Length: 471
Ligand code: SAM
Ligand code: SF4
Image (tube, rainbow, N blue to C red; front, top):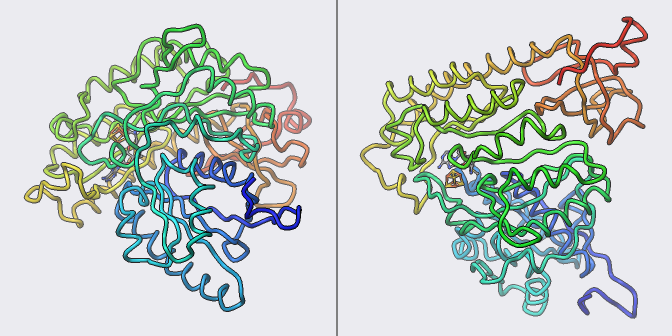
C-alpha cells in the first residue's frame, strides 16, 4: 500500500476509468492494470467524469485507431481543466501500443498527459503514479522493454473479468509481417510457463469464469516450460486447462497458419470443451502478396491447414483477417483473395484497408501504395462476400440445439444475450438466474449478426421431444 493511499489510517479510495481499444490482449491488459492499481487505492468506475485517473489503453495497428487517441485526449484535457477549477485533479495516462510507439510525441503534443507507458511496463504503475504525484506536470514516460517479465510482478487477478475470461499465455511476435507494428510495440515473443497459466486459469474459474480464452499475438507459437521440465506446445496446454474443475468452454486466439501443428489440430478432435471455432488469419489469397507480407506460407499451405482442421473437427467454424490494398496488390491478386474466401467458407471475418504504419517495411514501398478509392472498392467487395457467407452460416443453425453461454441481459426485458460455440450472439427469453450459465437453446431465427432461439425446456413444452444437441 503506497502512503498516498492512506489518510489517518483510512484508505482513500480513488476512482479509475480505463478506456480500451483494440485486441483482446488489450482487454486483458486493462483488467491487469486495474489489479495493479487496486493495492494503491484505485477502484474501477464506468465514466471518465467520475474518475481521478483515466487510462487510455490504445491500439496502434491502423492509423485510424491511433488518431482516435488524440481526439479522446482533447476531450480529457477539457475534463482535467474543469476538475482543476473545482479544486480536484485528474491523472491522464496513455497506455498500450500508441503509448509504446509514440510516447515522446504524445508528451510533446499533449503536455497535460501525466503518464505514458507501453504494454510491457504497466506492472510499474504504482511507481509511475508516485512519480506523477511527486512532480505534477512533469510527465512520466516508461516505454522501455524491461529485462524482467511483467507477469512475474503482476499481483493475482482481482476477479474483474467475469464469466468469460481472457488469459494471456504468450506475448509479442517474432514474425515481422511487413505491414505490422506488433513486433515493435509488444516486443519479442515470450511464452509464460505452463504452471503459471494453469494457476491463473484455476483462479479465474474459482472467481466465476465459465469460459477461458487463451491469448497471444501469435498464440499457437506458445512453447512454455512444462511443470516437470521440458516444454509443452499449445495442444498439450489446452488438454491440461480443459481438465480444470469448472471449465465449460475453452478457446484460443490469434493463431498463425504456419504454427498450426498436428498436435494442436488433433486437440480439436479430443477436447469437448474446446470450441469448434478458430480464428485463423490469412490476410491475402495471393502468393505474391503473402510473400511481400513476409507471411512465410502460401495460399495452398493455408488451404491444407483448413483441410486438416476440418478433418479433425468436421463442424469447425472459421474466421480470418484480411488486408486489402497491400502495396502492389493487383486486381488479379485481389481475385485470388476472393477465390480463397469462396473456397474456404467463413463463419465470420475481419477485413481492413492496408494502413501504412511508420517504421514497418511495407510503409516504405512508396511507388506501390494503392489509392484509397481502390482499397474502398475492394474492401466493399470482400465484405459483401464475407457477409453472404456469414448469413448462410447463421441460417444453417436454424433448427439446431446448441449450448449458449449467457453473459449479459438482452435488449428487451426478460431476454438474455449469450454466445454460441461459434461466437454468434444469441438472444433468448430467459430469467436472470441463467446469467453466467450454459444452457441449451433451440435456434429459431438467423440474422446477419445474431441468432435467436428458445431455451430447450421452453421449446420442448411447445414442440414435443427434445432435439439432439448438434454443436
Ligand atoms: N497476430 C495476428 C496474425 O498474425 O494474424 C493478428 C495481429 S493484428 C493485432 C490483427 C490484424 O490487424 C491482422 O491480422 C491484420 O489483418 C490487421 N493489420 C495489422 N497491421 C495492419 C495494417 N498495417 N493495415 C491494415 N491492417 C492491419
Ligand atoms: Fe503482426 Fe504478423 Fe506477428 Fe501477427 S504474425 S502479430 S500480423 S507480425
